[in-house]
Image 1 (tube, rainbow, N blue to C red):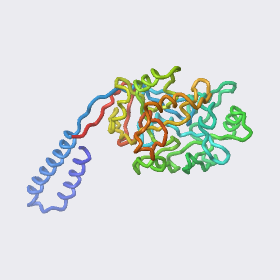
Image 2: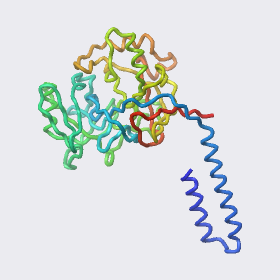
Image 3: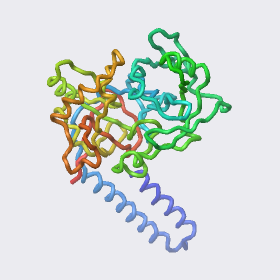
Image 4: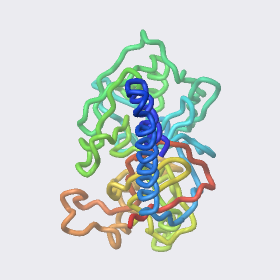
Length: 339
C-alpha cells in the first residue's frame, strides 16, 4: 500500500510543478481520485486473501557447512538465499575436493558428526579426536577462489585456508586433500534453483543447498514416520530449516503459500529423499536402508510425477522466498488462501 501511495504522491508532485496555476483545483481533485483508487486496489487485494493459522514455528535451524551439524537459532532473517543470522548463513560453506567437486554426507558420512558453532567472528569446528578449529567467517580477498560443482552445476567459493584443509583431510584420513570454501554473496553468482529442479522460479537462488533456499517439515510428520519404524529417527536425518508444530501429519503438503513473521514463502514441490537420510546423525554410519525403505511404503509420489522424483519418497516441502523478512521461534505459520 505504501509503495502505491508513494508513487501517486511523486506523480502528483511532479504534475503540480508543471501544471497551470488556474487548473490546480482540478489536479487536486484528480489526485484525491487516484489515491482513492490506490486504496481500493490495496483493500481489494488484501480482502481477496485469507490468513489461516496452520501451525507454529518450533525450531529454526541454520546449517553453515553443508552436511555438518546445524546451529539452532531463536530468530533469523529469511533472505532470498535462505535463513541468515548476521554473518551466519545457511549452507554458505562447502567441503570440496581438489577438483572442486562437492563433498557431502553421501560421500563422507562422518561429515554429519562435525559440530559447528559461532565463536566471535569465526566458525568453530569440533569433531571426535580433533582439536577445535576456528575458521574466520570473513576471509582475506587474497585467498584463492575455487571453481566448484554442486550436482553438476558450477559455482564458486573462496578457499578458507590450508589449516582447515589439513584438519578436514586428517579427520577423514584421506590420501587426497579436502578444502572448505565460502560463498560470498557480494562477489559470486548464486545457483538458480530451476537448474536443480524445473518447478522453481527464475528468481529462486541458492548457494550450496541441494535445490531450495527453504525446506520445511512438521514435527507431526516425523512422529507419524517414527510410529512405523522399529528404531526412530530424528529431524537431523532430514535437515529442515523451519520446523513446525501444532498441525496434522503431512499437512505441509498443502501449504502452497505461507506467511511466517514478516516473510512470505511459496511452496514449489516436495523434497524427494535420498540415501543421506540413512546416515545416522549420532554415529556417522550409512545404512542405505531406513528410513528410506519405510518412507517408500507410504510416501511415494504419484506415477505422473516420476519425471520429477523418480523413485524418491517425499518428506518435507521446498519453498522459494516470495518476500524477505524476519521470523522467530513461536511465530504463527499462516496459510495464505486466495479467494
